[in-house]
Length: 172
Image (cartoon, rainbow, N blue to C red; front, side, top):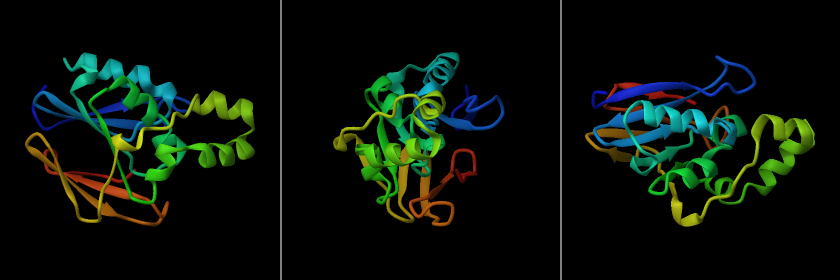
């Protein structure tokens, strides 16, 4: 696959075609934009394999916002990808590190059984593997620049990402 590639991965969240994770590939480096839920992990790992990559080559798991359909799988992704760092808005970091409050609120809404069916286990992440991104900050992934914009609206801790490698914007 060419450097600068973007791969769309259907996560089958609720049903096929409803939600996606994006795999950015730059040479021998990769990043996921959003992670969906832990239930999506086999699809993400399969996409890496299909493109000749290993989990060790994933540098970042970018979370546009910590709502469960976008970020609940980040702990599972980081467990599977030992060199990856989670990139997130400063206000979302605490929920990746300790998802207890976030999951408790969702369980009250969905109920325990429906929550588990939709999201699986939501794992906390070691704080040393979570990096916050400032508004306007640029992070390098190989030759491409990922520029983060704080875009409160859908969530107060929301970011959009401009990818120089594809000239695409990921809005979550």
